[in-house]
Image 1 (cartoon, rainbow, N blue to C red):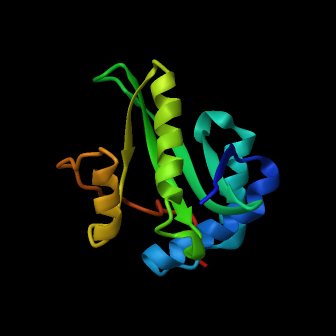
Image 2 (image 1 turned 90 degrees about the vertical axis):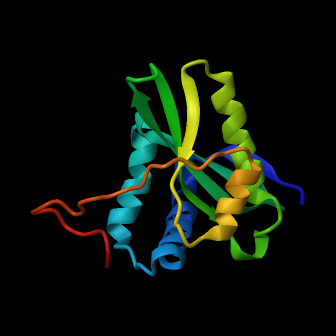
Length: 159
């Protein structure tokens, strides 16, 4: 598969929104509020300190995306890059798109001495994804996740 990887631009917002809508439905059976989602994607471009998107293209069409956000570790005095909003179009799955996106993020992180590691979270039932992450050199940690969302008085993002 001939892939081109590139940073996303504001012109890519409609595709990123569509991919995130598909991701939410596939992974959580959730329908997101389109206006909230679009504003959230645009906010990444409005404030680069929030993170960035990288896209994979094949034959001029976007077939995959990965988003990185930042977490400061006071314990380790460095930045963790969190891999999020990973989506590969159905017709491009199992073709190395995620691997290429991950390796690009890994390359960029390694080139920045302030970045000390990569992290992601995953659904416990998604064993295919877990096998992929392990094959790329990631290790499973003992942490689990909890959340309180939405906070009182805040709207839900689910349509």
